[in-house]
Structure formats: structure tokens, C-alpha cells
Image 1: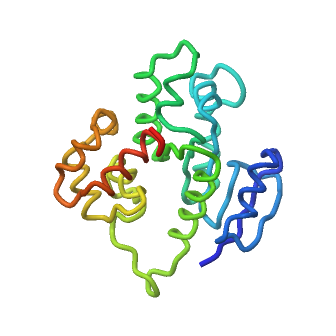
Image 2: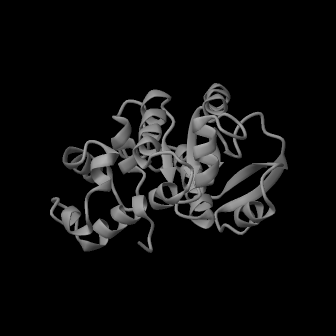
Length: 218
């Protein structure tokens, strides 16, 4: 299934190029969006670099992230914050903000505003993940049923929603992972070896889970 994407006209040219070059994008429109940076059907994405995220969530410089998310939730059915980086990038910034406070802000936004905050490592992976989200929300259940938990659902615990978004992690494994690591902070402390001890998680899946939160090259 291919999708049409609308990109806010204030986004950088390289992001637009990444969207245009994605194999599953059928059409790209450039327009001034009322909220968000990328829109695919009923799905809206607020894109943030690590520094933009910290500045926005702390109200230091640029748009206030909480206000942006209020508009996003009010305008679209499904809202996400996708980070053009990973947790290591966030914590290596010289912003004077403690890493624990940054992780806490991600947990707070995800849990209290019901907007998952998902690190995507880099721009290419961010665009790919946004397209996948758009496709999952748009697919007809009668034609291709989606297992409960395979995409974020507001009926599920927020952390389990995030685990269900990891590539190759189905609903049952997301539930198992959630039982082992009920908070993202706990999962961040887990090594690949720790993850391999979970039933149903081999080396390949363990590395995929670890890379989703730490970056593929770390």
C-alpha cells in the first residue's frame, strides 16, 4: 500500500527529498499545516531533532512543545512525536538538562498527553517510520486484519504501545516485553544479552529492540 504525504512548507528540503524518495509514497504535497510537520491521512507527526525536542519541552527556545501537541491532538486522530536521533543523542547534548529529566519528559508526554515519543535514529528512518504508521492506520481491517497491539492503541498501556511499534515485534511479544520491562527507563538499562533471556526473543530480535532505543550503530 502506498500513501500520500503532506509536508509542512517550513520543513527542510532534505526532509522533503527523503519523503519523495520513499518507495511507499505515491504523492507529496507541500503546504502550510495547522499542526505537525508530516501528515499521512489521519496521522500527524511532529518531527524533532534532539536539541529542538529539549528546547521545546523545557520552553527555552522556539515553539513550546506542549502547545504544539495540544494543537496536534485537537486537529488529527493520531498524533506522534518522532525524534531524529536516539536516547544517546538526547543525553549527549550540552543543555544543562539532566538525562533523567529528558527521559522523564518523554514518559510524561507519552503517558499524560497520549502522544508516543519515538526515537528514530536519523532522518531516513524517521520518514520510513512515519510512512509505516500512516499505512498501518489506513489499512482496511477486513482486508488485512491488524492484531491487537500491533500498532499503538489508546486502550493499551502506553509503554506497550511503544514496544508494539518496534519493527518485527508482534502483539504477543510486545506484551511479553512489557511484562519484563514495564517502563522505558528499565528497558534502557537492558543489554542485548538481557533481552535474549526473554522467551521468544532471539539474538536478532534482541538487537532490533536494543537498536530501537539506542541506535543501530551503538
